[in-house]
Image (cartoon, rainbow, N blue to C red):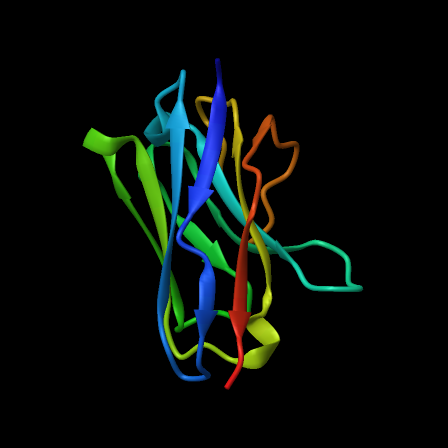
Amino acid sequence: QLQLVESGGGLVQPGGSLTLSCTASGFTLHYYAIGWFRQAPGKEREGVLCRSTSGGNTNYADSVKGRFTISEDNAKNTVYLQMNSLKPEDTAVYYCAARVSKYYYCSGYVLEETDYWGQGTQVTVSS
C-alpha cells in the first residue's frame, strides 16, 4: 500500500522548535517531488515548500523562509520539516505530499498535481 504518514506535531511555545516527519511506504520518497502544506483553522490550505525530485532544489514560502528546513533520511524513507522560531501564525495542520514524477522541478514553493497525501499532523504554537 502506497502511503505517507506524518508525525511529530504538538504544542510548542512561540520561539520554540519542532520537527515533523513524513515517512513513505510502498515507494522511495527520495525520487519523488515533495511538498509540505498547512491549513490553519478557517483558512485555505497553503504551500510551505516544494522540493524537486531526487533531493533537488527546494523553494520555501516567504512566511517560513529562514525558519523552516527540509531534510531527509533515505535509509528511513523519511523527510523531515525542521521548524524553528515558531510563531502563533504557524499554527495549522501540516501535510506532506508527493508527486510521482521522475523529473519534476519546483519553480515555486507549491507542489502542483500531487499524487499522495499524508493524514496531517497538528502544530499549535501558543504560550
